[in-house]
Figure 1: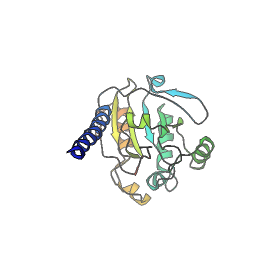
Figure 2 (figure 1 turned 135 degrees about the vertical axis):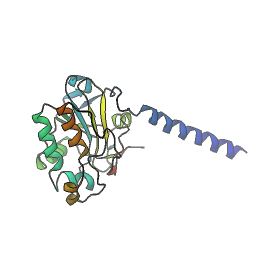
Figure 3 (figure 1 turned 60 degrees about the vertical axis):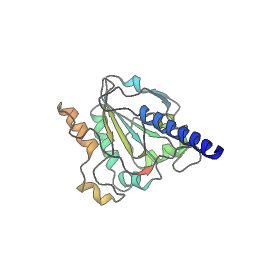
Figure 4 (figure 1 turned 30 degrees about the vertical axis):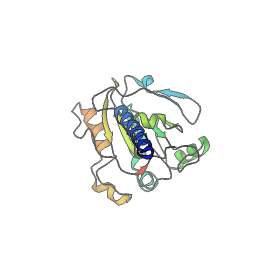
Length: 206
């Protein structure tokens, strides 16, 4: 009886944690949660600092083969970042890998990686506690979110429609992020405001 009681308590605790995380996940059309993180050069950035501008949040892990598909092997994401910057869009890369886990690059390593893959992101932010990743329910690398100039979440999901690590699939896929930014620029409603993200799991501490 005691074992059953302890098992019930443990199950209830796990369910409570899962429910809390699910409840915290931002919803399309609602205010995107504010946060503050330091970039790899020591400068702090808050989402609220960019009010009045469209913001893209991109969860990243340089060691993930799905990330490499869109960086090292194709230049897909750097190209999107460059186009976004030309339109005045803020692009924040966020790495929520816990200390010592896959993809947890220190500041110098992250800067070298950005230079090597010709990133045009506004900033690279480290979230080793995973607090911001969990706040947004970021599940994979890559996982992308688009936030309106008014601070509303407009898109959440994958980069495109083909769930693979093969760079030759990029040309055949529908790029949901590129499409959404084009819709915003044209003043249209976003055709696909949500999609299922794919990639490596975010390397949280727990």
